[in-house]
Length: 267
Image (cartoon, rainbow, N blue to C red; front, side):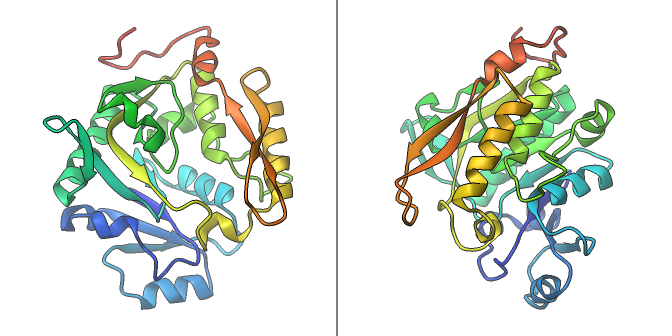
C-alpha cells in the first residue's frame, strides 16, 4: 500500500520522509503541482517517487480528490512536515520513533484496511493521555489510511465546496461523510505525530483569517448538527481570535441508521 504525501513549496523541508526506512521510501510518492514546483522537486533527487498533478489542480482539496479518483487501491496519506513518537510500555512515556517503529505503524494501518475499516489513523499530541490505547470515532488529521475503492463506491469526496477551491478541512469533510454512513474510524495512540503550526509552504500559502471563517461556516452547514463554529484565541497577526470548528465525531457515527462493522471492532 503506497504512502502518498502532497507537498507544496517545501522541496527543501521534507521532514516526514526523513524518518522513513528504505523500504518505506521505496513505497512513497510525493505529489506536487505542475510547472516550477515539479521541476524543483525532481531536481532535488528526493529518495522517493514524484507524481505531478494535472495543471489545473492548484489547491489541496482538488489534489486529494484527484488522488482519490486516480488510485484504485487503499493508500496512506501523510502531511510532509511530520515528526513521530512511539509509546514505550516499560517507561510509560513517548519517545522519538525509529524507522523500525514507523514500519510497524504503517503495517498497523495496512492491517486496518484489511480488517474492513474505511479510514484509520494514529494519534497527535492531545491524545497522549491515552497511552497507546486504540480510539474509535474521534478526531484525526495529518495522516490517514483510506480505503479508496470503498470510499468511491459509496460516493465519498474530499471536495468541500465546488464554488471555492480554497476552502480546506477536506479531511474532516470526508471523515464526517464516512461516519454518517456508518463506517467507524480507528485511531491508535501508540504512535503520535507532531508538526509546526502554520509553517511556511503547504496550505499556509493560501490560508487567511477570512478563509478560516468561511470554511468553518461552510463545514457547519454541510454537516449541520455535527459541526459547531467556535472562536479561539490566536496570535495570528492583527487578529486576537480566529474561527475554527468543534466536531461531534461520535454523534456523527451514532446517527447512521446502519453500521458497517469491520472485523474485530468492539460493537
